[in-house]
Image 1 (cartoon, one colour):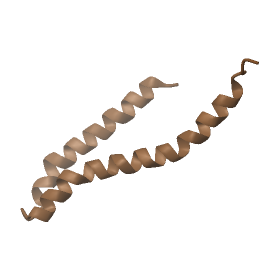
Image 2 (cartoon, rainbow, N blue to C red):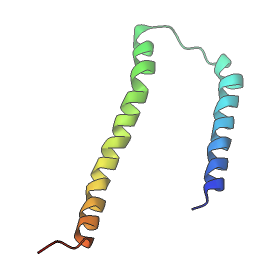
Image 3 (cartoon, rainbow, N blue to C red):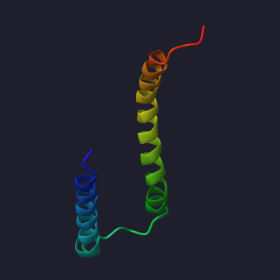
Length: 74
């Protein structure tokens, strides 16, 4: 694997997000309502839970194929 390329991609994404927060975010006005606060607090949890749910649906297929490749003791 090309670890240097992966590090550069993460660094580039971090720079873009940082510049977006610094220069674009002050132009966006979000009303300080309880609903917006709940969205801000719960959205990361929901996104991670969704990603893990998708991963758990994919992972059993890989686990079964790796279990078949190991020899069993008679």
